[in-house]
Length: 294
Image (tube, rainbow, N blue to C red; front, top):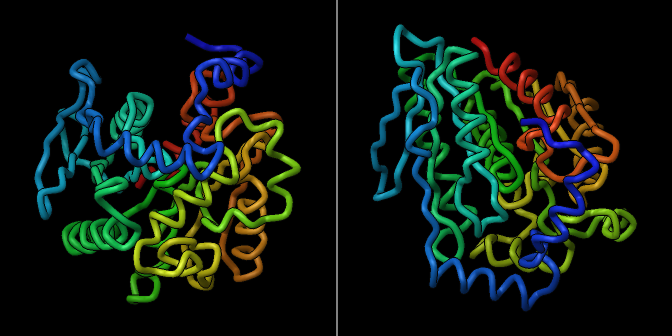
């Protein structure tokens, strides 16, 4: 089913999708609620019949593998889900992961990293780095993808792999969190049009997620990291997203550093629009699959 683009913002406002992000207090309540009411994270039981799904555990953290049911795959992709560091992986994430696995003929590895208040940026980063290095040893390479909070983790991992001498890694970023200080002066300009995220609560969640690190540490806010030597990058961002101004800065800095960047900025689109059941979302998912093929 295709949902008209115009219906997405009023639906998000009606369901109060932005509630955790509206204020410091609402962000703290959301963290407390995540502690009181843990969310399910497993893949839907009827995801796709042409898949095989497995799970292992690294330091008691579930790590799923999703691959086509038959035949060898052409390498591996790590998909790190979003959710504002408080929300668990959702049905839309699993559907995109399944599509990537089947249509790109890859094994998709999905870490269910610890969310707030049980996890932090360093822990999530180290988990994904460890998985990436194992996959590189096994397959010779790895590709990275992530959305929103998962995009923050993904880009910081790409920077660390570069620092450890891993050849340029192909990366897909869907509306990534890039600067968790939420200090871009254009955010207040965009805020009235964004039905999903907000500055004050986002900044507080970023502060808590940073843990013992400075919020400007590239592991927390990869926009403060270096971009030289990163691999080809596909970036999606909608203009009704308070993270959009930082996405533009990322693209400019990465291109200035010689990175091959494809920027898909959708006018009028909301946060993580490639995950939504709209025409632009469907087109974006096809491009993501193409970027992650071997």
